[in-house]
Image 1 (cartoon, rainbow, N blue to C red):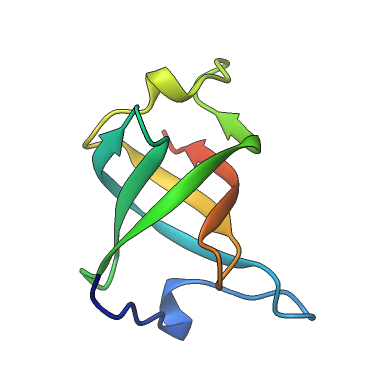
Image 2: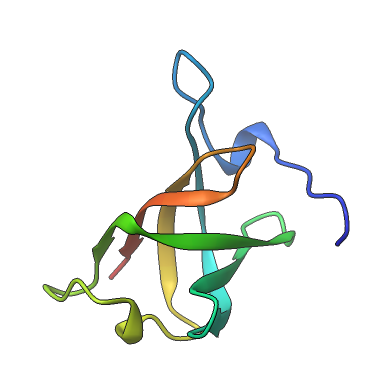
Length: 91
């Protein structure tokens, strides 16, 4: 897997560095592995793991199966593990 670079204009980290945020578009969803690939505003793509504890928000529905390529999202994730803490579909 290629190296992923995160840019300051792509997100923020919290005070202890355990959380980052990305805004972008979903480019792929893997239901079997529960992974979602997001292209950030800078054009870089990264794949993230949707955990059972991930908070999902999509127009009142909270289910991984509603996430589809092309959706605009905001995601909060751990920068080392790339596990999503929150995935919200933007209007």
